[in-house]
Image (cartoon, one colour):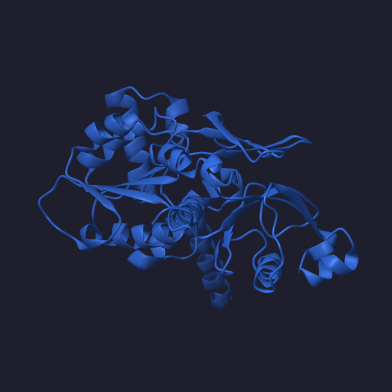
Length: 342
């Protein structure tokens, strides 16, 4: 499954190819509490059909109502503001007096959507500058995570590669993890050179590789939009992936296993493969946040929660790890047993 921004751009480009008048709407700035962050996209066509979201529903409904009522939407880019007044904030469901500033632009040849989509699918980082007077768009290389910039003359937004998840090992937990990741818009690659097949290999939309894990990591050169998780339970495969993953730009590198196995793995990576303490500190193992996981599906949910937290910049110390949670659980159980004996 593609990330939501790419889906919106693809739908907008399809409407353009079909000759259906449509508009692209982008959250430019926000003040106070707002349902969607700067850079969030939606596309709207003349029939009132919508892809994506800029508010979670309320503002989309207003724009759709305007279209269906025959209102003339802007031919040139226009800046729209919602939630300035308290009654307007209540009308559009903006909490705590929140304000959204949107840029709405008609989609046409000058929008350069096909070229932008091609860059996104190649995992390029692109800066898109919209001339507010003419609607002309220019594309150039830029940062992936910068905030949009709105001036009196231009609106600049940023598009980076979709978030990618590389899974080492095709087992039951991998299968559930891939299903959850797909709903979150991750691009998924499952790597397992072993002959055994598993449910993870049958997930539509996931790329399956029979390469050795180190060859795959070296070929893909993980960037800051990539997460890597080792789930094969085979030290030979997991270690091969981790050696190169921990020296890449990946925003998350994790491995499944008990606390003892995780400590043994770190010692092995240090002593036999020369990884230093700085690299090993990046390894999340045992992978996942503590939710009392018992089943493969619950373990996958735990790991995916940790990956999403890392993607969103949540510091590891703010999360309770699987190891810490289990230790706390054992301590609580011991205290309960002591209380029962007294």
